[in-house]
Image (tube, rainbow, N blue to C red; front, side):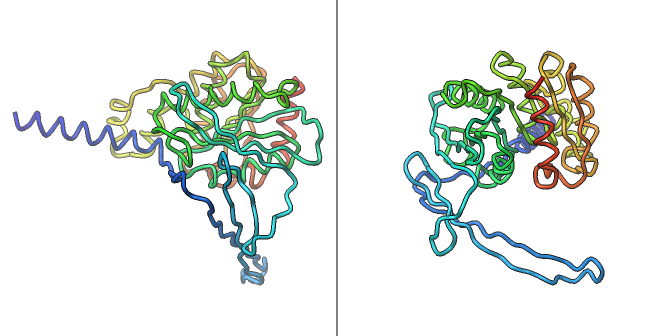
Length: 312
């Protein structure tokens, strides 16, 4: 009997541990009115390797109604932005409130493509919005939001909830007048990349293409990779409610898979696995650098490839 009890406890603890890796949310109290982001900047001499310029500056984000963000420097001077930002609160299928930001480029009066941006499993919108900004600065409308339990969004993150959240966000932006005549592309990074493949397949009539960056191929694959000594247990204990590499089999619109050969979080073979299962038209963009750093280093090329998708 004791043996069975110990085995049950081990099974429960290990299963919970595996499933915790999928969601590492930063929750933001609804009463927060301001956050400060410290940006560090340094330049090295390529010959000597010495830092010749080292500085830091602060960005303040102030929140108004519907968590409307305003960006200032540390002296409360408004920052000059190449885009507008609209704070949006909407509801998911569980009638829980989700919070997001809609970016519109100022230099493109009528953007041809709107991007639904699905972020990774850690942090919140404040952690991930710089990636969305890269896309806005390249002329796309972009909506980024926090899943259930992230940032200002209500409820708790589960595989069921985040998929419902992505569908709710897609339906919400599709209802907007400024999106009606644009192509809609889902762009996901890491967990969001995995989710993007599934959400795109389940809502194919509403989607014109999907971009999958640094995604894991399945929950079982990433759990086994994250816990090498317990890889076999991970594949047994982790439930596979849905997976990116299976969903892309049933998606029949343009797919762009972006993956770094230097990615240690979601190894390169996972991106290839997703791509190999995808239907045409599809393309694979191999990059360097770390996990989901594509938009930080390759924004120009990625923007060009997204425009190509929109033209198909």
